[in-house]
Length: 223
Image 1 (cartoon, rainbow, N blue to C red):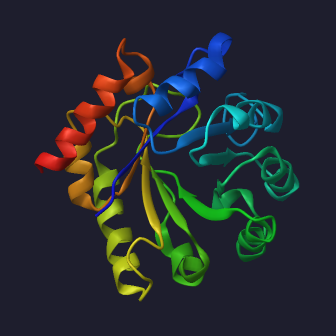
Image 2: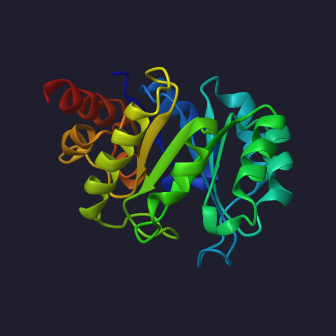
């Protein structure tokens, strides 16, 4: 299985954001994870399309935009134009989930659906065939630096089973985890079925991004 590591710029030094994203990509990041919060769907306010557009010229890797906003459809085209490659949203933030997935695809991006710790997985029964990514939140969204919620491992395993049983080609649907991912638990998370790992403070709070990402890859290889 191919594993991907995506540093979350929520934990980056925003005064040096261009340099930060270039540094983590040079250190081995596969994607850049971009957390968008609206102080409405979640109790925090972060960044919008202008910041995505600003960092796009600095990196060649995919920009993975996680929309924690409600309503969601209005902002999708803006992020597509700003250079997003993947746009994920929460089912609670859309009145018509299938339509939102279609909107993301119409604007040339891959589409993902995000599940909070308390959100049931039954939405996947109706739209998994149209998704490119499923994101399991292992913390409640809104803030970086939170501790991993172990129940997420069961959810990951359940989603992995659904993806594998769906008939989709291997690798067609990424299974992403976000929240509390660290060197010492990344292998356990991979065993549960994740192939894409978002890490914020676990990378950006260290002095050597390359060493940290290498240690994560070593832990994945060892399991």
